[in-house]
Amino acid sequence: MRGKRHHNAAKNGKVRSGSERVEVCEEAAKATLEGRSFLYVGGRDCQVAHLREIVSSFGAELLHHDGGLREAVSRIDRVLPSVDCVFCPIDCISHDACLRVKTGCKKWGKAFVPLRNGSKSSLERALQDLTNSRNDLA
Image (spheres, one colour):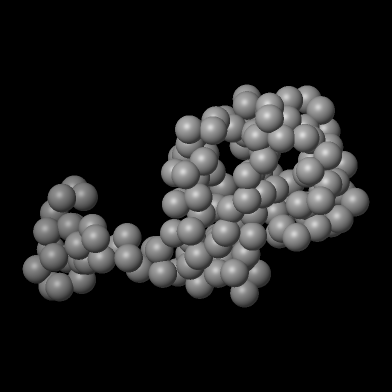
């Protein structure tokens, strides 16, 4: 059934190609998260560059803290006031770093978003949810 509807819509010129849909979605996301700054605490070092690419595709900036592996956990306190939201993959972060992030977010009134895991898709879903919630408020 879906194939017939898709075929009929295509005949009428109502269907966009996959690349056009992606461009439209990306532009809408960029407009809503443009200029925002996010902190990602924990995760895998090898994915940080990919995570930055994902966040920049939404028009925002990503700061990263390794969750206490090499960087001092106290650095989180200095970074928190300058960001809009904090993401923490709960499978790749120390308890101390997570606790510090949660208490710091309460103190500074920042959004805290725990992620199910440290995957790229988990962050992308969270960003899309943020985009959708901002669109609902507008």
